[in-house]
Amino acid sequence: MPNLKVKTILVSQPEPKVENSPYFELQNKLKVKVDFRPFIHVEGVPAKEVRAQKIDLNNFSAIILTSRNSVDHFFRVAEEMRYKVPEDLKYFCQSEAVAFYLQRYVVYRKRKIYVGQKDFAELSPLIKKYKDEKFLLPSSDQLNADVPPTLDALKVDWTKGTFYKTVMSDLSDLKDVYYDVLAFFSPTGIKSLFKNFPDFKQNNTRIAVFGSTTQKEALEHGLRIDIMAPSPGTPSMTGALEKYVAEVNKGK
Image (cartoon, rainbow, N blue to C red; front, side, top):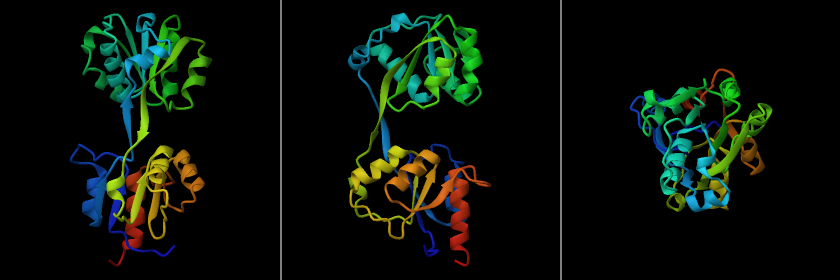
């Protein structure tokens, strides 16, 4: 692969809402154009379909929340089901960010909220402490593989409910648009590329991937991976992009 200079990057995620995003710093520092376009998005599962999963919200005394999406869609479904969320319901949040987001829906100081560090496994001691509760895990159709075995090992009464789904976005407006680098963060993002553009040819486009599952999907689709994160020295996608672009653009 020739070290062609990079002038344009498409990040397959929504544009950051914070002004100090590393992507904006990357753009200004290396004088490249960075665009954002989600290749996938989340859609809520209607309450009717949640009921079809034999889920009655009245049967649970504790909720396990792994993301902001799980918070949003739990309360959406509760509203659609006309379920009055009881004040003594216990909330087990995977991280501080999820717990902080929960404040959009509940008065924090009046609720029983238990917070993990970051990874789901770090929530285990808190769940184990309340092992007699009946736990509901509102999640997407693509639940992280480590969650079920972690909960099963705790021998707690838990139920998974699919409250939202990850679906591929319509990218037809990008048909004639070319970018030097495409950055992907999930296997579904790679699938979305080929669903929208079945005849996609990589040619001189550089592919950046985050995570081993995304890498695997890209390779299975015959893509050449030019930028990989996390990797030694570059734990983030922005770090990996900056290192690559600085190298190929030197002397610009």
